[in-house]
Image (tube, rainbow, N blue to C red; front, side):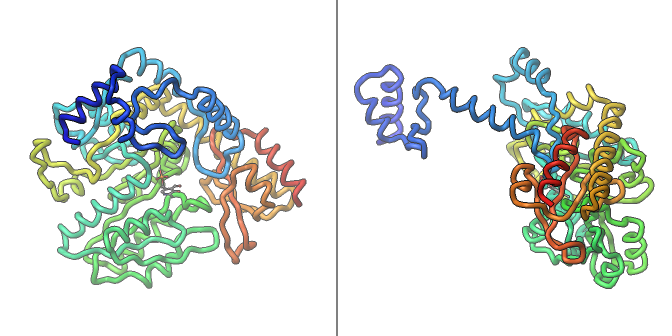
Length: 424
Ligand SMILES: Cc1ncc(COP(=O)(O)O)c(C=O)c1O
């Protein structure tokens, strides 16, 4: 069938005349038997969709094992989105948001999100470049790629990547993706990078790309940035790029008394990656990536003729809706609301740790952390409360953790503790 015949058949299908069945035969059946691409398939199976929605909403109460804020408040955003007519428009934030572009995008709002957060991470006015990313991993990806290019521009050498064994797996994958030498540094039992092991691992002849965990995934440990910086000064490699993986903690730490930990004026770093859907709470993965103009300017511009621009991001199409959602939330919430939420999750984590201590249940909580980790309970608790497992023989062997987010109240903690009491 050629292009013209196909178009004629599609027209026949639209008006339901002879020949339409031939086109239907060409369509692929999906796993559920529904014609893929069949625009005339009939009404949507609303019962199925509503049952799915009901089930997911029910599970929300027990979703305490992963760092996702389930206290969303997106109704007003979506109302505006529909009422304004934007729900029927395709926007795309492709390109450098700092450059004027004729495309249908929300760059202006994206820039305001970065301008709002950059000073909270200690970037001076006019010093920062950044984007709203697809996720924390997307931020790590940009951070590592930008770091490699920055160090290469400075030294004409590829760097060695240093990260602790407790760091998120995305760092290890991203080093693999760029074919970089990766030195995984052991962590102490509470999860922080062992700085003496790090110092021994530093190659003083090669540039260093160091990823500092501001909240490890499982134990919620913050690496000792001052000690890492001191070790780097002593080893003195040809150039250093430091990046903070602050996926969850980067959301609440700036609004807490511990904010200096992510303030580059207090402890220098070159880039930071934060997840948007973790502390802030969105209905889809989002994130922030912020670096300096100095790092940004050392990137290969790769001029893209069809966009009439040099595109600095790795990803081409980027969500315009995500940037709008971030802008909406930060404008509505402001620092006071974020500070209230930061205090709430830290307080609930302490409450849970105290409850576990009261029943003499082996449990740990790092400073500045909302992640309580403890001896792994029975499978039924793991399943019911959607807990994440890990293992460390230096503690008690099998472990699980709970991440106290905004949707988990003291009452929920009490409910969890009651279950645990049935289990011991
Ligand atoms: C420390 C850390 N970094 C990065 C990530 C990845 O973030 P995302 O899920 O937004 O890609 C996570 C996710 O849990 C994390 O804990």
